[in-house]
Length: 306
Ligand SMILES: [Mn+2]
Image (cartoon, rainbow, N blue to C red; front, side, top):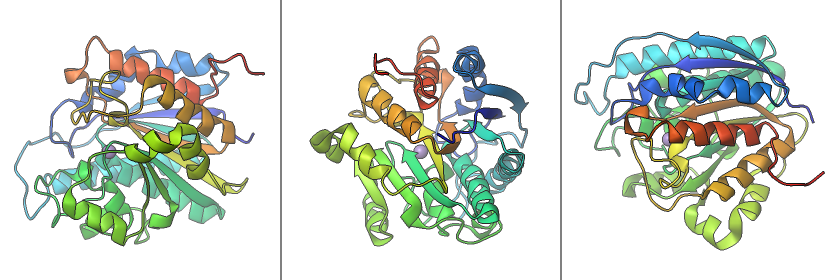
């Protein structure tokens, strides 16, 4: 096991790329749900760096296919810089979003760190959506539906170049898990770019265990594993506090198994927790279940296994 046990929490309180207000309150909801204490109970050294700051959400319609593009760029730039600095210092960053557009800043920083250190990168994108939209394919212009496309080099120049290299990542490094809502044009583009997608149909038929075995296959000691956990990955019955609920997601036990199998690899080097929306939650339930799952990511086992 080579898991870094020194963790830095970085709050990014914005909903600048979302279609619904409220994900900006996500970082505080996770703190209120005792994330730091939960991680410390597993022997993790935790430093909470507080929140990054950036422009307010002007809540305007899209311009040329993008909503709030200059603000999205500003938030992702500060995110990139903060995540990159933590990795450089040898710490594991946990980004507390914020909406999923922030994955551009976060994953581009991880990719840059991997280039610096000669590491292979594997990205697990746990999500109900493929987040592979472009301005031509999306009707909404909300950038939280576009981060994977931007990271792969498809998007506005000022966003795709944040990591210092375009594209920041190859689609081959990505494994998407839990997908169950993809727009028609987006679906064609996902196939065209050959993303490896384990959708809910696959998980229903093959089970979470087999899914994760494949998603985690061919990792080795030189792999940096990044987990981008969109809380809408979970079934809405256990996680109502997100802006874009889609029925038919992983159950509580399936989600824990997913996290436990990631933990077992020992290779997780960075994590995003995004799209938690306390304005839509019920007494912070979704934050609590997220903290519970993060504990599994850090090796909590509910089983009696030795
Ligand atoms: Mn997402």
